Amino acid sequence: MIKEGMVYQGVSLETLDTIAQEIVKTWSGPPVWLFHGEMGAGKTTLIKAICRSWKVTDVMSSPTFSIVNEYETEGGEKIYHFDFYRIKNEAEAWDIGTEEYFYSGNRCLVEWPEKIPSLIPAAYAAVSIAIENNTQRTIAISVHDGKEENRI
Image (cartoon, rainbow, N blue to C red):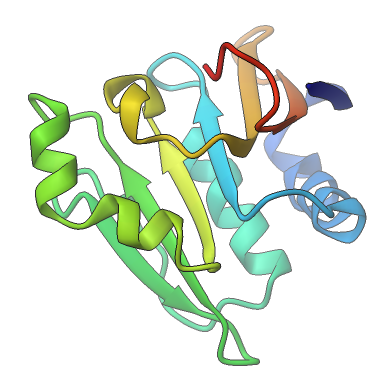
C-alpha cells in the first residue's frame, strides 16, 4: 500500500532547512529513503539538509565516486548516503553490500534508486523532487509499506 505523505511546493534554498526539519520531525516511516529527481534537482542538497536536522557531525558530500558515504549523528546513529548514478549494473551495488546496509536498520538515503530496482526493500519512502523553476522545487514524499506489487 502506498500512503501519500507530504508535498511541499515553492521550496527554495532559503527554506530548505526549515522543510528538512519538518520532514524529520514528522517522519515515522521505513529507514530506507529513495530520492528521485533529474540531474540538478537538488537530491544531494536535500539530503544534506535532512542530515543537518538529524545532527550529523561529519562533513557531508555527494558519494558520486565512492558510491556510499557513512555519516554519524551526535547520538552515534549511523546514516548511509548512496549515489548510484555511476554504477553500470546492479552487480556493482550488490558487490559493495548494498542489501546489508538496507537491512541494517540504519537510515539509508539513496540517490538514483532507478539503477538498482531489484535491491530495493519492499518498505521504503519515496522522495520526489521536481524543478519548478531555477530557484524553486516541489518535494513530494510517499511511504511504501511493502504490501503493494509495484515498488518503484
